[in-house]
Every structure is written in C-alpha cells, then in structure tokens.
Image (tube, rainbow, N blue to C red; front, top):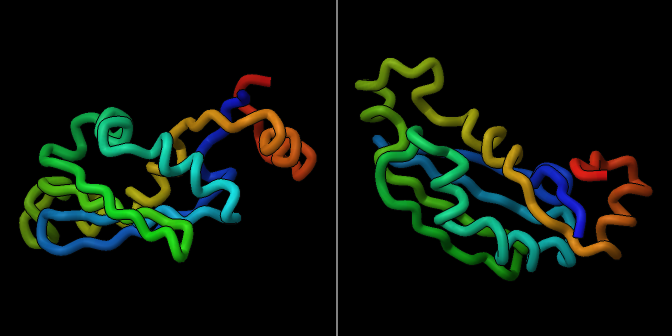
Length: 122
C-alpha cells in the first residue's frame, strides 16, 4: 500500500444550505471507488475537518456515478448570513477534503506513480 492525497483519485464539489455543507467526492475511475468507500468515512472526515464541523456527518453512496455525498451539519458557522468566515458558503471544503490521505493498493499505486501522481510515502 502507498499513501496519496485523495485528490489523486477523485475530485470534489461543495454546496451549502444554511449551516449545512455537503461535499460530493467523485472517483476519477471506477477502480478508485472502493478506496473512497473504505477510507472516506464519516469518522475520518470528522477527524480531517477537526473543529470546522461541529455536527454529525452523514455519508450517502452514489454507486452508479462512483461517488459519495457527505452532508455535514453545523459546518458553516451559522450559515451565509451569520458566519464571520471568509468562505461562508463552504466552497473551500471541497479542496480541503481532497487533502485527506488515502492508502492505495500497490497495483493502483504503481499506475498512479507512472501517471506522475504524487506518492506521499515513496
């Protein structure tokens, strides 16, 4: 197993509604989806976002598009009209989740390495 940033196997989009943020994490290829399912769990996402997300995180699976949707409650400091945050919409959360570290099986890691993707524990 090799370690990569999530951004090497997926992209993400974020949206908001009030004080709730949601992030879609979409695998670049179907073979990466099991890695996302296994490692991008609500518990790991909570640890990754630390104090930014104060409420529960619910994960929804979207297997037909090799994606997950993470709904994070109490994540935006009260929402757009109440937050003092520089990013009250939480769009930067999609970039932040892509800095999560994931372990990738050797066969996939070798392919990613050949593509010039950054291995964190080479």
